[in-house]
Length: 383
Image 1 (cartoon, one colour):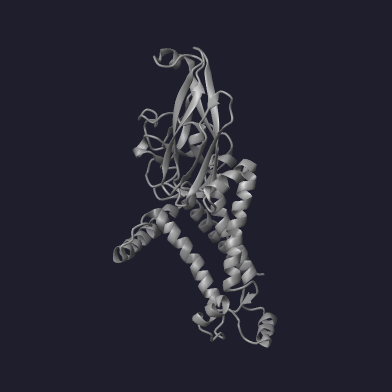
Image 2 (cartoon, rainbow, N blue to C red):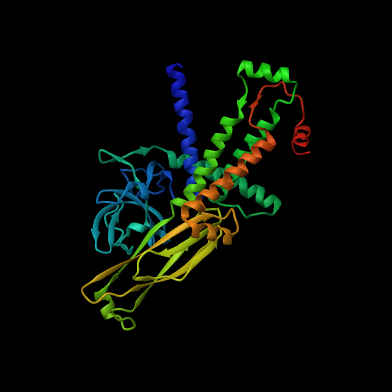
């Protein structure tokens, strides 16, 4: 293979990884491998519209001063994901600031950023953020074009369920799979056995097994990101000095922590919360959340005496709603790995069944020799 061929192959792999990462980010509702900024608050480190490599917090480890992180803001611009640098740390959390801003986020009313609110770290090499110029500009341009097309189609047919950026991701993902299946069906070899032997000897056409493997990656990677990335441990710190000034709570009683559970992706999920701390009381919480859904969860932590602090922890699990919620809850009781494995098996099995019923797992001819209509091919497959 020539150097040019290697370069072309490397570019194709990088493009596939980027597309899968963007789809995964849309499914999860937070960055996966790639992200970008839409304002100038991080200039000159990251210019408006530039992208960066986003390492999930579960892989990046504990944050430290100087790290550029993506966190869930509570007050900044009405809440949502924000990319800023950690410039300090307090006993309540991290102090953050945009490189172009003269004051910290906490000076502007944002609470200190706790570790459970940090969803990703910007990859830094030698202290410099790895920047991908114009990534965000390109994504927003495509997104705006797709939203415009969606609006036009939805208006004409009177449907608006999938409007918006998340709907764009779903449409692109579905169209990609549909186009693959359609092209493979159109090119399926149905001729005599001598023609199939000749095609195999030439080595031409599309290897459906390899294409199926790619499809499995494209489907399972975002699916697992939607389950694994939002999962994890959440912490609540209670200050005994603050409790001492409260009129309705005394040391040893339960301090209430109201936590909002969100599904920022466009895939329905089942959310399970469990206490990992004997000082934490939590009601049984197993709820199905639709796209964009929210639920309130009240968590109790035993209040410490003055001069002490106590940190309570709870663990969150998420599962794609591909089975009835009761079945997923039973699988979870057998172990999270069991539940994730079964859900992956259902997704993979469904995809394999679809491929086997449409194109099979042999070599698919992509030339012009096939003369059989699509309707005849589908009838042969499903008739």
